[in-house]
Image (cartoon, rainbow, N blue to C red; front, side, top):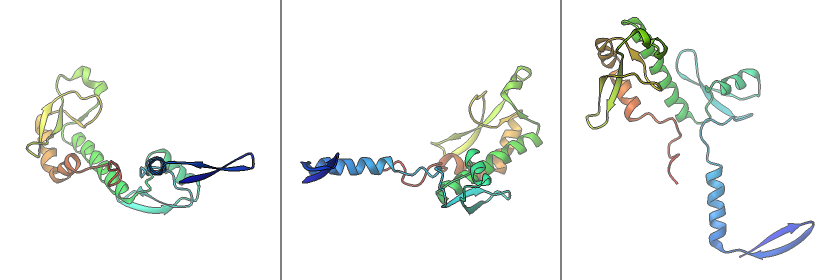
Length: 176
């Protein structure tokens, strides 16, 4: 196949192999793959509302649209929005639960505490349990094993969903 190329007003045809064209088209598709987090000027986007559910709005380029995007509460894919809103709600509820049941620990305060407990998911058993651990990156830290076990009971179904099914990216994102 010949492709016309124009340089400085002069057009010439260059022979190009069909596989090169297919590879270029595939590369362009991969480059344009949507994450579900990009800004969508004059388009629809989703966000977490005060009630803890997913709402839809149009991006008119006003301050509230920019602020939502800036803080990560702006999604262009409804599935991504629904999953992230649900996961965010669970994290807030777990922090509150920990605070109301003996305390929620901050890693900075561990100098006064020798133990902390977190919820762990065992993929083989498809169940949550408690471990004594000082994580530095994720999790709600509980002051007692008992309060952590109570949280697992109280949020059982949501925790199983979070650990086994939660996906922060659009469906099919990882597929070619």
